[in-house]
Structure formats: C-alpha cells, structure tokens
Image (cartoon, one colour):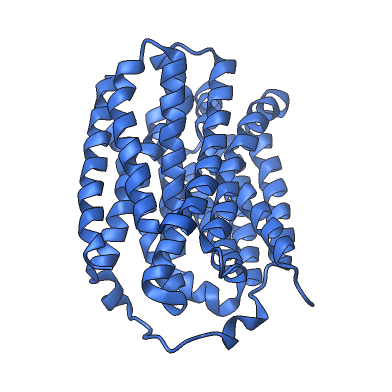
Length: 385
C-alpha cells in the first residue's frame, strides 16, 4: 500500500497527541488527593516514573523498534499505554499507590516510549530536506496532547469519577494510537539513498564527547521545564493565587506554548543550524528563570515568563533529532537519539526533586544556573562538531 507523506504526518501527530496527555499530569493531583488522600509529593512519583520509562524505552528499545518497523512499534505503544491507564483505574479502586506507580508509571511509561519513537523515527525520514520542521510538527503534537487532556480530565472526573476517567482515557488513547500505527511506514526510497557510514557501537556512542555534550544539553534544558510542568497547576494557585479554573487554563496554555516552541525553534534550526538555535533558546530561558522569582507579585508577568520557558523547554526535544542526525548520520540516528533521550528520564526525577528543595520561589535561580552550565557545554560542543 502506497503512503502519502502528509498523511504520514497526520498519523504521527495522532500518536503524539495521545501520549502527550502525560504532560497534563498536574490535573490528576487534586482528584488523587480528594478521593484517596494521596499527597502531591507522593503521587508526583507516578509522573516521574512514566517519563523515566519513556526515555529508557526509547533508548534501549530503539534498535528493536527499527527492526520491527513503526507499525508494530506503535501497536506495542498502544497496548502498553492502555494497560497502564486501565491498570491505574484498578489501582485507584483498590487504593494502592504501589500498583498506581507500576501501572501509571512503568507500564504507561513503556507505552509512551514506543509511542514516542514510532512517529519521530519515521516521519523525519519522509522529509530529508526539512528534518527540523518535520520533527517539530510531530513533537509539537506531544505537547498539544497536554492541552487537550487538561480540558478533558477535570470534566470527566467530575462526571464519572477518577477510576472511570482513567479507564475511558486508556481506551480512547489506545484506539487512536492503534489507528495511527496502522498507517505509519518507512519511505520505500530510504534504503536507496544510504551512503557508507560507520555504524557505531553502544560503547563508542556513550563515550563520545559529542554525545555526552548533547546529553547534558538536553538534561540541563529539561530539568527546569519539567519541574514546572510537574506542578504547574499548584504553582499557579500557590505562587500567584490563581483560582482552580484559572490554573486549568494556565496548564492548557503551557501545553500550547510547549507545542508552539517545538515547531517554531525546530523550523528556525533548519535555517540557522541546530547549535545556534540551542544557544539562543537556552540563553533566553536562563534569563527568564532569573526573572521568574521577581514576577511572583504579578500574575500576568509570571505567566508570560513561564510560557517562554516552556517554549524553550519544548524546543530542546524538537531540535535534538535533527541535531543528532546532522552529527551522526541517518544510520546511527535512531540509536544515538534513543540514548540521548535518557537525559529526559533523568531530568524527570531531578527537576521535580530540585523544585521541591525549597518552597521559596527563589529556587528558580538554581535552574538559571543549570542553564548557564548548559551554555558552557554548548560552547565546548561547538569545537567538536
């Protein structure tokens, strides 16, 4: 069956919209606290585990995914994500936080990983002339998934309860991912255009100073953004006094800017190069993290700065695929990108932990420092590429 590359983009977007719901996690915190008296500090582990296993799956199952193809990879993603969310429903019914961590965190995280790499590895191959734009469109959809979910979760919870909401969303997202997976395919011309390139071993990749620099760039850029996302709803209410409805809108707009940043900055990278793009948005985010503690008394200013930070946070994900491809080539692209995404897994734990070190908003100065270190890493990387 022949495939249309633009329909391929739509299929990839549907997959990413489904798995991107994980970024609306802060909307689960209040229902979990209301029904089960689970503390936000404890339930946050479910989110961290999901992102952790997303990265680990992308890293260590990347070669496997490329061998079995995007359709089977996407189907695996649909199965694991559905098992994770429906299992979370039973965990809530039983009141077991341990089971919740296993289902919502581990099983769903594996599904997120397969669901993430299937379209990202595939759609970019259909647009060799604009890899940044292609990856940006697909990865933008991951962010926009949180925008949709932020408006769906609360009304569903209020109508049918927490357990049924998890059950319903598990079936809905699994079905959408399955439809997407059935269309995804590698381009036929891919094998005809390969040039001789050294296939790097895992040892060569992880000991390469270029890879280490790329990993650190992604890790340091993710820490601050993911810390904000993990507690976005709570930050809005506690820092600037938003109402519950205002915090819902705040979370939704965060998802929107996460998506806009991914498309905007990845498109810029096609014109000025990935390295320059990274240096620009990291510099902007560093300044914004310095300004964030100064904006606590002004809700509008606080939100604007947060949205800029999240746009730069998303930019790292959409720009990294073409960055990796430009350095390591098509043959090593999938494996190197998978290993690089473990930085996301690590930051999923480190970012929220750092945010929890202090209840003072001045903690955001720490994230500005991390981005300052990222700029130094980027300067070093420039000498090696």
